[in-house]
Length: 96
Image (cartoon, rainbow, N blue to C red):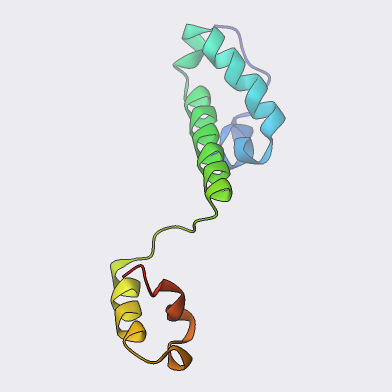
């Protein structure tokens, strides 16, 4: 297998997330070369692309991550109060 010019330190997922053009180019190379595709570098590029895609979807939907069960229980208690006393958890009223 031919040696790659990418240093080992530059092969981590956050690095690929931070450099979309580099990620796209390397992703194409990984998809075109079966031997290269089985390397940890390509696995990291795929993971970075998956994370970036999830972030794009989240931005498009405008929905934050789902709240935890503990937050939802607190929201139920807050929603039982008058609107002026609900505080920030009042944003979840109607979802509980």
